[in-house]
Length: 418
Image (cartoon, rainbow, N blue to C red; front, side, top):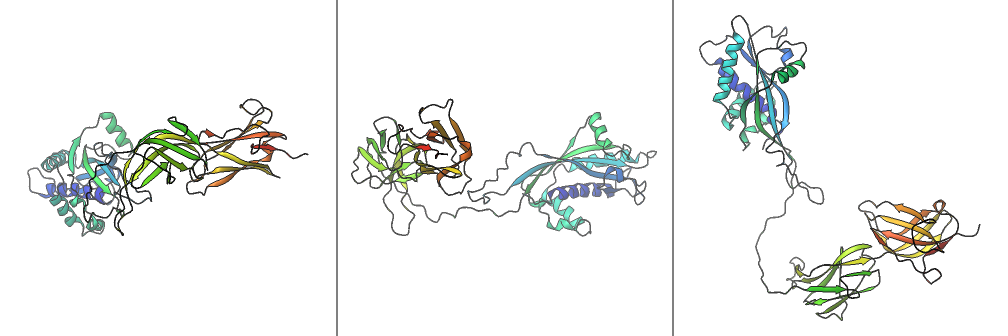
């Protein structure tokens, strides 16, 4: 991999190859010809004049087609880099030869240019190092001392390319003040630019410890009232039936929470109490057997095996509904956790069900990650008309059960008399 100086170093290496080719003794050499890296519209200026030479101009940079998908800079859950971000680039050069037309200097220089680049189709480590050494002493290119393109493991190849007449015309149209001069195009591939960021890796394995044991995984047959699916809520006991449910250390995973079975557990039946730390919604339930505890100081017990998963619906419950001065306050269990989307439905108390006429719907957007659980919802009082309303709450697609109107605990809210 290379640092951000790889692009400029590749241009310098091409310049070095052509510079040596022009200064070596050869038939038909052009006196005082030199290699420049200018924009084509600056080739004829008062300080350069009409001197002969070869100009390198990087006119385009594109992602490398073969390696563009190789950059997958993973991060851990804290945002630390696991791998350094990598960008693979192809560099497209316009090589322009200029000189006295009557002496065919441009054509002689072009022949020398394509021959030199054919001799050096790969910018290898030795060539790149020689180019850096040759130009690092100059003020304009002193930055080359910090280049590490010579250490890149992927070879840097130089390939001639062909542009159509239309593409070449559009390219030269970018420089309207400069007339067309004899030119060829080359592609240099690949420049691998790696970001100098610190990466975080897991500690190396000091010692391998392998423990083998023959265990039969537990199997869940039913939850709740005997079906494959069940509905429950905070404070309710959830019964799990199956085979080989009891192990040396048994846990029940319900959604994101692990629960401990009650003491009367048997290999065929487990009972857990659903707490209000289990979010409302549809969750998988699974029986876990933990490996025997390790000696003190070792990592905590790991999961040795787990059962199949069945689904459990945890319903939200409206504990209390109070018509306040400015808001209608709804106390919920379980509370609303970060990321959960809630919908509140107010139905006419004389028609407890349905979402037709006489129903008011209020949407609560999901809470931002990291927010604390919210035990209550507030609905602006102005959103609900005067009267008696049966309240239902839907959390992540699971709706609370509407109790019959007039029974104790029924979630009915009534506006105070005007």
